[in-house]
Length: 184
Image 1 (tube, rainbow, N blue to C red):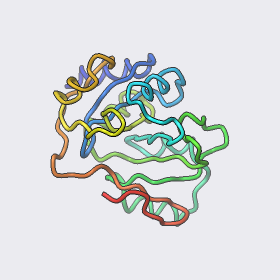
Image 2 (cartoon, rainbow, N blue to C red):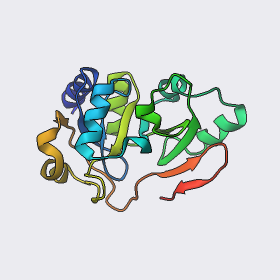
Image 3 (spheres, rainbow, N blue to C red):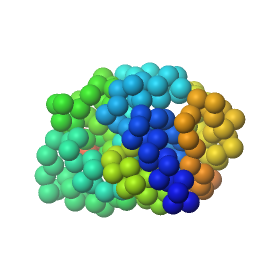
Image 4 (cartoon, rainbow, N blue to C red):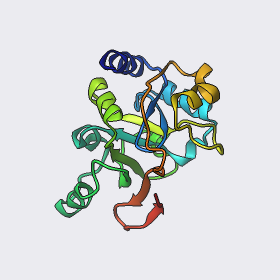
C-alpha cells in the first residue's frame, strides 16, 4: 500500500487528479494550488466552481497557511472535532485562489481521520482537494469499483481502500457563526 500512496502523491504533485477513500465516500483530489488540476477536477465532476472545495490534511500545519489567524477559542473548537468528519468553514487568507473558495471568503477544511487519506496528505506534503467522487447530482462512490465505473477513464490514479458504508459525508460547520451548513 505504501508504494501506491507514494505513486498517488507523485500524481498529485505533478498536476494529476486522483480518487481516494475518505471516512464515508471516495474523494476526488488534486494539488490545491494547481489551477489547471483543480479546473480539470471540476470538469470531471461537472461541479459549479462557485461552490468552492474542501481541503483535507493529516495535520493543521498544512491548512494553517490558507487561513486567517485563529483565536485560541477557535483552535480549541476545531481540536474537539479533529481528526474527524467535521469540515469547518474558516475565513481564508486574501491570497487563497477563488478556485478553492468559490464565491465565499472562507475555505472549507478538515483534518481527516481516514488513515489512507491522512497518509496521502503526509506523503504529498500538502493539503489535498477533497470533493466526493461522483458526477454532480449523482450518489458518491463508496468503493474503488464505483469510482472506476463512473469516473475511471478521466482519472490519473485511484487509491484503493475501505470507506465506512454506514457513514454519511462530513458535516460542514461555519466556525464564526456555529451554523451547521450540512449535517452528517
